[in-house]
Amino acid sequence: MKRTVVLISLALVIGIVVGAIGTQVLAGKDELARGKELQRTALAGAKGREVVLVLRELPPGKESGKHTQSGTEVAYVLEGSVIFEVQGKPPVTLKVGDSFQTGPRQVHNVKNASTTAAAKVLVFYITEKGKPLADISTPVK
Image (tube, rainbow, N blue to C red):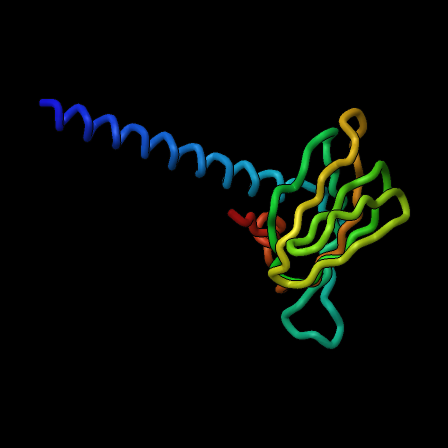
């Protein structure tokens, strides 16, 4: 009887941990899927590739979460300020008019530096043609 209670308790704890991790991954994916897709266009001279232009807004105090892109990302800060973190490098605070770029599979995070105002970033992705916006970025555990 005691062994059964221990096994059920252990299964419950494992279920809660797996559920919490899964929720965080899904929430991160949801955050990365947000953004207003402004335009898609074929990339001349690069068969099967396209440029996707996206307007992303980070609410006050929020962040993208650690993630990577399947292609190249070039971003320009339109409003507010953000903290750009690249794995293995010190964080950099960027303000309106600043830009950053990441390469494929480069782990990074973008945080809104303000707890009171949203930040807006215009992002250009060079990626596989037809790839949905939700699949361009992938959360990192």
